[in-house]
Image 1 (cartoon, rainbow, N blue to C red):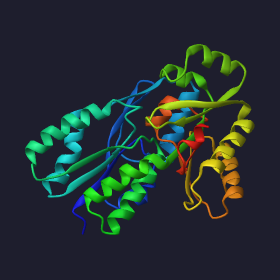
Image 2: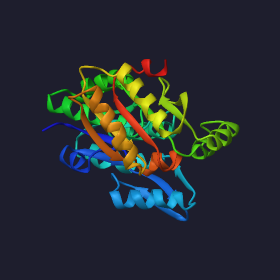
Image 3: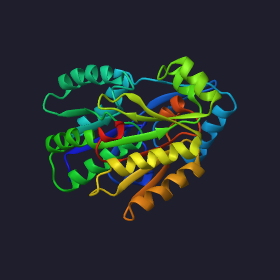
Image 4: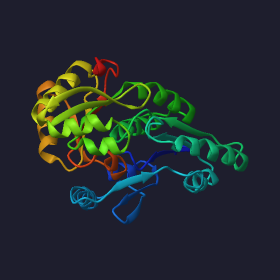
Length: 293
C-alpha cells in the first residue's frame, strides 16, 4: 500500500474509471455557464459536457475562477490527516494563478502536518497533458517509487509533453487575452485556424495559421509526426464537441504510428470555457521544442 496519494485538478482529462481505481484525487475548479455556477469536482460526464458546449453555441458566456487556498486546504487535509503524503500535478502556472494559492496553502499545511510532504508540480501542461503525467505517476508509484522519486521524475517528464491544438472560434481566445482583438476579427472573417501549442513556459503560443479545418488538421499531424517520441505510443485526442475532427486526427495518427494507443476525450469545461466549442488537440510525449519550429 503506497503512503502517498496523487492529485490533479479538474482541468485534467482522465478516464473516470482510471481515476477511481488508482487513488487519484481531484482538486475542484469552478466554472460559469450563463447564469449557472458549477463546481467541477470530477471528470464531467459526456451529457454535461455536451450541454456545456451547446450552451456556448447558443451564446452563453463562460468563464472560470482560480482555486483558493481554502479549497486546497479542504482537498489535502483529509489525506494528510490519514498519514499520507501528496503528489499534486496542477494546471500550468502559465494559464492560471492558482499556484499562488497552493503555496499559501502549503505553508499552513506544513504547520498542521510538519512531517508530511506535499509536492506541488507546475505541470506546464493542460487538459490530458496533465492526464498523461498522472498516468505516469500512477505507473511510477505502482513500480515502488517514493513520493520524492516520483515527483522528480514527473518534473523531468513534464518537459516532454507536447500539446498541438486548433480552435473553431478565435473570439474565445481573444476574450481570454490570448490573442489580439484584431487577429481574432480578421481570422474569423477569413476562416483562419491558428495552430497553438503550450510552450516551455506553460503559456499558449501560436505557431502557424491555416485556412480551414482540413489544412489545420494536416499541419497538426505533420508537426506530430516530426516531434513525437518514437518509443512512446500513448496519445490523447481531446475535443470540444468536435467528434468528426477528432476522428480525422485519430485516423491520421494511426497512419503515422500503427502502434498508437489513442484515447479520445471530451474537453473539460475548465479549459473549454476559454477555447470554445470545436477545439481539437493532439497531446503526447515528444520533443516539445520541435513543434514550435
